[in-house]
Image (cartoon, rainbow, N blue to C red):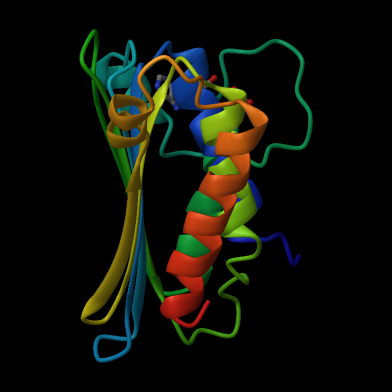
Length: 181
Ligand SMILES: Nc1ncnc2c1ncn2[C@@H]1O[C@H](COP(=O)(O)OP(=O)(O)O)[C@@H](O)[C@H]1O
Ligand SMILES: [Mg+2]
């Protein structure tokens, strides 16, 4: 199975969007020294009650009645297990959800990160009413983009206008390129 993490991230963020989050924070933290890749997704959506959040750590739990092959939580759980890592999800009803997946970066089963620039760009322009903060940290360097800051500068100009879409793409692509992605 060679599914890119970027696609899995899109799927996990879809959960946050369905939970009516207005702010979603995504971070990827790559450490050469510790040989770790850590993914965090935090949202301020409706959350889950304790029992459900606990049960979700076991495979194939869903509130949906029709099931496609899930790219969601079961996938990231399986990946972290395969990659000698750790998966955790903490949630509070009415407050939000925090998901954390840590992997051994050099592990042979660690999926490629894939088109994370494209994924973040799509999330921001396709969900103009939701705010996103994305941080990519690689050892001592990092790139960060916060749609709230962009919106503040843009004023009345919509974040999904064509001109802004291009600027966002440039910012994200260049930011990640500088980190060697
Ligand atoms: N960020 C989140 N906020 C609230 N509920 C969530 C969140 N992430 C996952 N869930 C709950 O966990 C379930 C399982 O998620 P997932 O594995 O992505 O499968 P699916 O989205 O197909 O149901 C979801 O149906 C939802 O009820
Ligand atoms: Mg899902």
